[in-house]
Length: 205
Image (tube, rainbow, N blue to C red):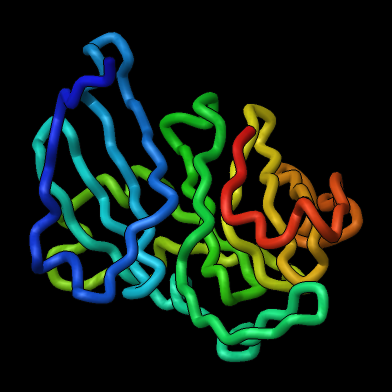
């Protein structure tokens, strides 16, 4: 039987009525201490921000940046001839391999956007950086673009990101160790099915 072992309520100052927390990513820094040194990163696709939760200190803080916002040119979705409007911000998130520590990266993108970004997790874990505002210089945007919107993403131990392409109704991958985002040398389509792959809102590796 499942048992609740921990509960934390995010302060009202960090969420809004329209907040929608999705795609949580967990980083365990030291497994030798019963996973107490653990951080969770939660995307808020409606307020365009990340909530960072520190388990050891039992506290959280909000991180916002322009890279988490939707792009107006990507607010119209078309899937198999059906179109609709959706301006979702940051949704897809994935951690680079644990072997990258202490310089692990959190890769992320807004769903209604063609771009991919990353930030070092040691920056996100430093609450003092976000006391007054978010320093924009800690965020990096990859060169290159997707040709359509993408919901969730996941990364494997080799640093390859897997994600859905909404309008193309495909699953694609990108090798973060090679080339520009979306280029032929670093990206490829690995699955294509117009029926079963419509709106891949969840990806697991």
